[in-house]
Length: 389
Image 1 (cartoon, helix red, strand yellow):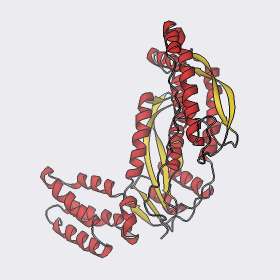
Image 2 (tube, helix red, strand yellow):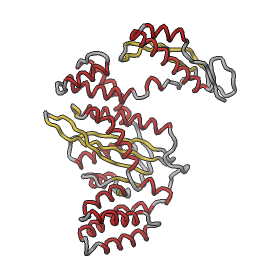
Image 3 (cartoon, helix red, strand yellow):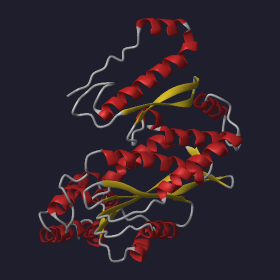
Image 4 (cartoon, helix red, strand yellow):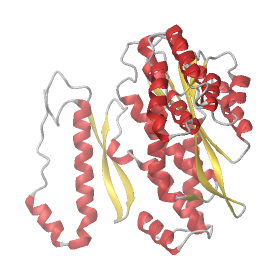
């Protein structure tokens, strides 16, 4: 049953607000947001105002006033309440954390004297007012507390763990350096995706990876059956030190990309790529190992460096054959993390150069927290009811 209510703004109201020009924009925005929140509450309750229906999931409980600062000024909203609790309009919070983190990243660039006049103009446009260092510090502290609590939340059983690294430009002691951003996601025994952790540091690769993985373990990460990643510098030693008994699957996508560096002639690339795909798409490990030996022998004389690389590296992509066939397509690569990285890159590109590590960690944490929340309310990553092996 669909509950429909007429929320069309009255013609007189719209004409009156439009007649006020820009001065009427705050009131128009207030009416729009209040209406959107009321519609959302009715969908949550599965019933309109004063409607009697067996599908009703609760009861409205008035409104709570809330002042929201916007680029067109302060707006007093009436936030709908539900008697049983547990409801809050997404219209107010969706995207707020990452937008706030992005604004502060730009603001920090300005107040620390490392920005341009263009950045100053952007921050004033985003925030509606001129930015002071005190305002930035206060806002950063409030957001950092929320994000730190999320990054340190307890973890539990994870069947498949994915690890990846990317780099962001950070200013450190007057120099521009590459800060490593370490990411971890996982799939639960019920087939649900989770963002598990993130870390930003300029430290040496293995030290950073080891501290990151130890942090995941100390937060309760357990029951891992497979780790999938690329052969990032420092990760191998750190992984063996912290999760030494857990099998490792090297990402098929990255392996095929790496193979290209050992192919001397462009016209050979498609042939080599097809041979590698044939190995990875084999029906079982025994067949894959036969195909691998055939490829090694095929290129032993014509391209000995490629043959040696295949023998040393492609075996690291065969671990997936030890797992159920219906799981292999989503544990043989880190493609799911690549999609997360694209979203991060889309947002961090606006900043370009972060003023410090904390600013970089703040924005990326906010983005990942939103992605994690979307995953929790979306469909399961794995179609099967459980991925227990």
